[in-house]
Every structure is written in structure tokens, then in C-alpha cells.
Image 1 (spheres, one colour):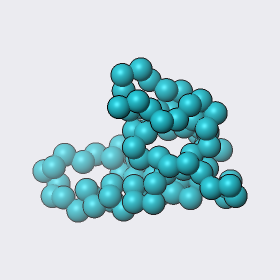
Image 2: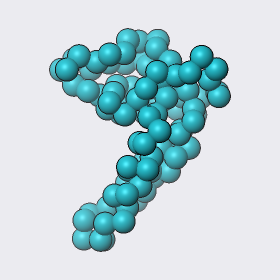
Image 3: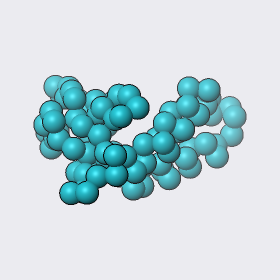
Length: 89
């Protein structure tokens, strides 16, 4: 599947991303979650309503880098959606 975004596109996280990722925290400790996993969830929560700019696309991968005011994340493009005409940040 071809990445629908191009460098410079304004995007935000899909509304269900944080909720879906948070559900995984309810798994038992033996599932192998680490401090990094919890930090990733905190990052997603912080960026939930923010608008970012696509900064890098990867060939043959869904991976997409998105720059936000507080930093850059790498995330699957299926976790993104086009930003509204009135961004919140």
C-alpha cells in the first residue's frame, strides 16, 4: 500500500489511536511491557489533539516521521489523518 501522505502534509493522530494503544496496558506484566512502552503511551496522549508535519517517508514501509512542536515521532501512516483546516497547534 502506498503512503497517502507527502512531505509537508499537515496531519494529526487518528482519534482512536490513543484509546487502542492504552488498551494494551491492561495486559498482564508477563506480556513484556517496559518503561519505554509507557513513555510511548504518554507521548501519544500528549500529541492526541496536536497537528504535525510529515517530515520523512520510508520506501516499502508504512513508517512515517511527523514533526510536532515538541519533537518528532515515527509512526505507521495508518495511525494518522489529515489535519483540520483549523489546527490546534
